[in-house]
Length: 175
Image (tube, rainbow, N blue to C red; front, side, top):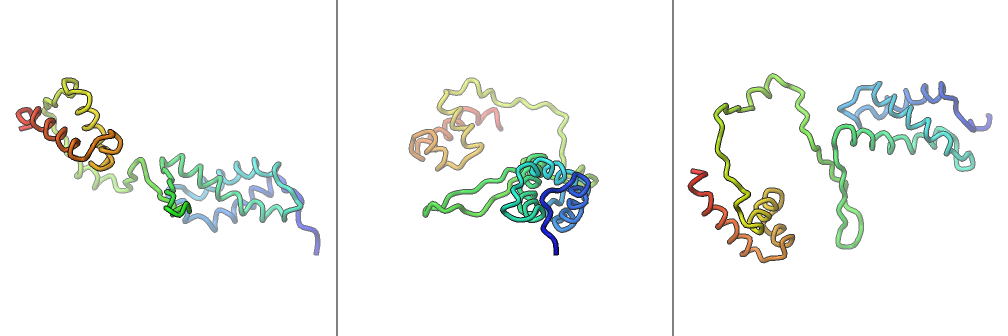
């Protein structure tokens, strides 16, 4: 046989990305074939100068590295946040993928889900609240009561009291 290729031309790289994309098409459901292929090609152009032939042929090198570059681009362009939590034994847990936006393929059905109320509402004026209660309300909109207590450095009962004060202050306006 011959020696494995030591480098790859841009045209050969473009051909290589065709096969690479065909195998990984299901990994990127929001993109079409050409989107994935072009992203892989651009990433491959950046990877070729870093290739060291002592550690394997160019196809093995690209196969192992392209997925990481393309997936990061995919997550970034589709507003997907990837997080990993550390376990108590300091090992990394499973990756969690959270979309910042909701993808709705059927817009006809989506219109029925929306409710638009043309009447203006008088929302409570939160600027009149004491800072501690306003901060608690803000934190509770994003966290549990337990997490809110930890963040505010108070007990859970103190958070409950602040919520009660908040309800009392706005009970007339909300009803």
